Image (cartoon, rainbow, N blue to C red; front, side, top):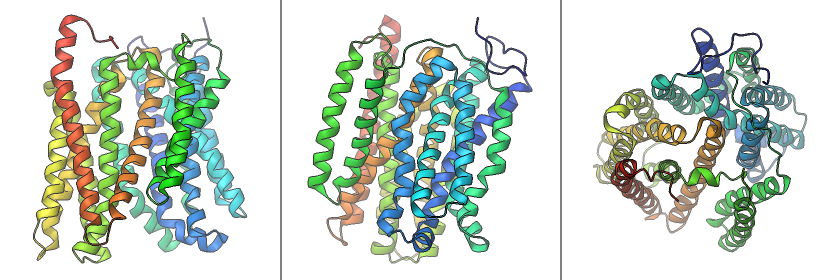
Length: 467
């Protein structure tokens, strides 16, 4: 029997950790997730300052974000496989260590090359955290409390994403941009010490498949890069996406012959998981397309000032944060499919309100933005619960990796569609981009209506795992 990952604490119960160890472990998971989210949302505001000081062009400075995101998406599944082999708690603690030390390196980076390199290491640290957080969260909570715990975690992360730009602006108003990285040091150190309370998870001494890992990096990286290029450079974007398709095909063929594939094809045989992943990708695409298009609509179509637009946009994260707390309570009564279908309807209603609201009072747009946020909050925790509770416990790490990949893939798809809409003309571009977002929301509705009809029937006939 292998030694537990957390030798300084008593062994966990079979069904979750006992208090107060559970509170310490969940605190570590939540704090690490908040740091990962804040790292991306805070840096957006500082890019012009970093570009001016380091001599990077504005286009090159975007790679401070791209390098971080690409490293995360390319490393998630290999790190999830490593977690199954050596224990998710070890991978998580390694991620916190890498993230915190690379934040220190970013704070003291002497030039642009060092800064980008440190961001790649930081992305690897975030990949360790994201690939193991779902499995550790499920192991920390008793089954009866998992939905509530997941809702609290999702609410904290949503609030962090919403607070990121405002927190960044407040720091930059009184301090140098390097302090954006420095604040990760105390929080990361605290989370690392708390991480010794994390539960031990079952290990599988499987052999790492290096060719599959290489194909994973190629397929996922080329997909994100191709979608990013498709709007501004269609020919280049299409060529990269064709290369990505070839990498995907080679990767699927290789993994289909393996009993423990890196790409979790076994999980996609579970209908509940498959539908949860697909609808998650669509909803993240909906949200990203909306949040890109709305500022252009407010400025170009409505003639609003920057402070007015910023004030309106705060209604979205507030609606999402408040609703996330109640969504976990509604899950047991209505089920994930019903809540996710309702979220899609609310999203379409909110975007329609924004397009049809009169111009004479800009605050009349706020209910539409609040509805968009409510839709996200109503969707996120129930869908994530369905996604992470459907696989076996020893495969939750791979499920969490696919969840993060669906998020990044959806964000890339939404950004691409918004860019295509905005590129048409200044007059109809923002409206077209919002229309694309509404189309994606209607796809979410269609998938979840089918999910609502399909899953109860399959549960009655015992065919939940049929491909």
